[in-house]
Image (cartoon, rainbow over all chains, first blue to last red; front, side, top):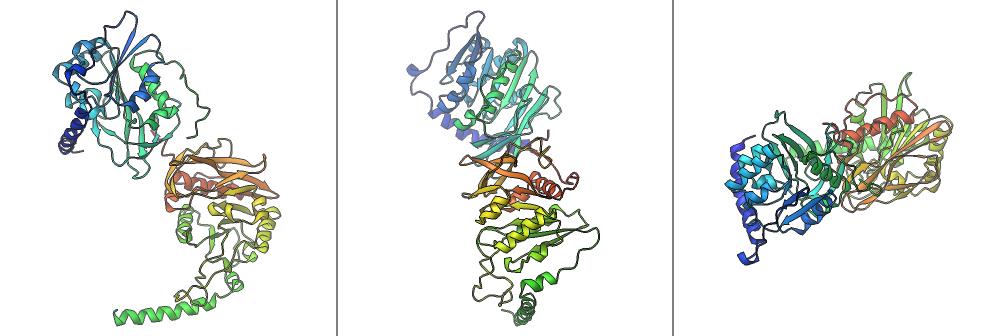
Length: 262
Length: 284
């Protein structure tokens, strides 16, 4: 892969996406969301920094609400995000979130994962916004999606607890954000699954995980539309990913596959 | 136009007319087929050349599936009018992929392949042809592989014979083949797969004794139903496979494997591993 060329293209496209993300921010500081209160002892703080996107919130929040003793905080915009908020987080969930990756927050994320054992789920287009330092840290660089199309999820890693026993399935329509692994020989990284675009046949990695110090990171890049989040298999993968990233035993999935047709 | 080319075209036209005249009748076509050699596996196939079905593409795809079977002889009947029950007399397997309508064009008719007008072809789904299929399957043990548009043939006794009611496809779209029967020899070890663009005819299976092999989901409309089945009839076996209206389906090694396994099973043969077998959605 020619990393230089892709970085250049990514930079141009990211600029456009950043403008779009900025447009979704509240108009004035007075409207800005405030930082969450400090978490209470014994509570698992899940901080979802995913922008004001109802599709993603509608997908992620119901899954996270099943985590016992958890305190789920959704950041509508990025201004409340500070190193203090990150250091009070047990599981970080990100999507979009371009403005949060300044120098201090980036350092706080790396420190929290590596030394404190914070979990991090990088959803969908997260690798587009993190910057090269965090891309190396999460083990993957972004690959832009092509047309929005049906996407088949397959090659599920049967040796990893996040994907063991999950059968291939189809997402009716999605942006197929892929990734280039930063180091395919990284001994701490596991590929969880690959996907294939059903129109253009494009195949790429869309699920991976990595251990960094005490902490665990999971990348799950399906999830642009509601349909992705309505797939029970993907819900189960996300559920397992959250528990794995929190370094907990993975409880049985709360959902039902009785009506799954894929 | 280059006069030289015109001369070649005229010559070709003459040859084509002669060939057309030579194969003007089904009896002549049938008689032209060499007798079955000792040890030969004879497969007779009839696909549609219609406004919706590219029988030539399907023929080439099926031939490629069995490329390694040097002792299998494939006879493709390229016009319904040229089919006679005699062709099945010593066939080991009959593959039929044919919708209800007669051939819209008789490619081997009076125009000899260069047509100024449309000469309609013949119909395949006659009582005599269906009776011959049934007799060869039930009494002689010929295998029958019913594919794709066959389930829409409209010939009720034949549909009863293959134990299904056919449901017409909608527009071609990505189709996900799923819910494979892990117990049946045809689908044991088969993995789910997608076809980028396929028609999705479906069937309702009539009898509990008939095995469902697999289902499919049309990805855009989420239409779901049975796309593969298998049953025994007298001394013979019938397998039904509904993917394959487009070349995309035959591009999937998973589907080619199903065609390979179905053919062997229908002939009561051991099923060797398909040389290009691959479950792409399961490979790590």
